[in-house]
Length: 299
Length: 296
Image 1 (cartoon, helix red, strand yellow):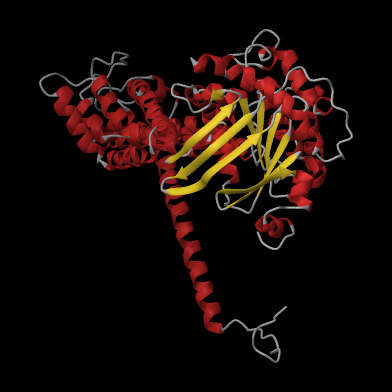
Image 2 (image 1 turned 135 degrees about the vertical axis):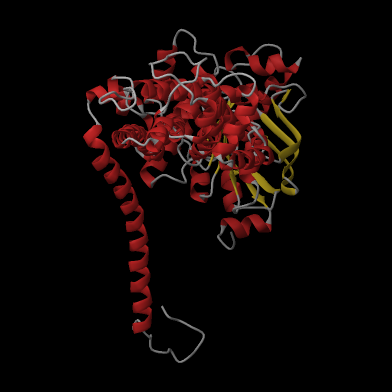
């Protein structure tokens, strides 16, 4: 029952039967008001309520080692949620559980429940590829396919999932425009993707991710291999993308979390310590450990 | 910067290299350079002597004509060239697809434990003396029947298989995991990820491995002596009969009492060595290209 809905659900068709998104939509303004005011960019009218990811009591293991120890988080639709914490605190692992990439690692497994709206991503019989089509991921190091041209890289997700459609070219161009790469590469779409600079490669990878039109985008330290100028571009892009996507970003860089995130999660040693609107978490943390971390006293 | 626990701050001390250390260093450098030089020298001597002794008997007729009757002048090794080509081609048709599949399975699909076991088995297989492989195939396909090109090819394929499979395994491991993750995270099915992302990325290296396997078995003699050596002197394209081959021909010519045959043996060796060297160089250049691509 669940599987076809999981593999069919698309942004445009979501308005219909689900009771949940409507209730989420009514909740949204409350979250909104506590978001940092420096977001002066006006949001366009949204076409739908977006999609919510709810993690409850997630435990993730590498063999016998427990890396995530019972985390529950709600990622509100069309917001950027940043996850910060010292190395090894389980933030990447937690995020990789959301699109079921965690289980790709030998001996790794996850327990708990992760819902995309009212679909259980870990329900029996769910095709993992359908989960990953709905929940895209951008990695730490830009990883364009070395044998493919710029165009083919962006088209790869569509072609290799058998969704190429008739308007492949148009969708590729649109994705490249969306990441602000169009002007830089429109005259060399056939040259290799790996010939671009690091920052351009990362934006190419983001274009590749959004070309398959996911609902949620996970970013695992997407700027840690980039210089400050390229980082700024990617951050601006994140700001634009959240108009359409629910975004989760893992970052080591607290300034980055402060710049891009509506709310921020602090994790420590596999536990969620605090989840609050970004400004609040950085200026007025409730937990003493959060305070010590954001003020640089450890980690 | 040299803030040690000791106080007061001791003056920084610099050492001069002792004469003994310099001597040891120098002599090790010389020794390792000599060893490297020796390896190159052996290659140069082998190739050089084959060229010097073989080039006199080498001419176009030698490549295009069949062997002359014993004692008669002229003649060539066309039958052996064709035979080696056929034997190696059939062996490749058997061993390359199977070897690639083994490598792909071990690197992309098998659990680490299985893939280690496969690697171990392949290493043992590649350590089996080729004469043993020859005897095995002799017992399996030749005893009770007749020698045939097919029997020889199967023996060569068994020798080739671990080379192709192991090199495929190694080359696929060079493909960065980040590419697999990128594809899988797009919702691409695993087999399609392997087919469309991993294999194209590793293509150069995979071809190199196959070509090196070909080069390796092209010179095999022992298994062919048992399985495909009693051949006619005519050019034959029929692998159901025994086919002549360059290595076996070299062996036979070297056993001959006629000095002219020795010269022919050297010339045949030159043909073989040039062929194998050309293949290896071709394979290396492909490999270099693919490595450059992997580095990005």
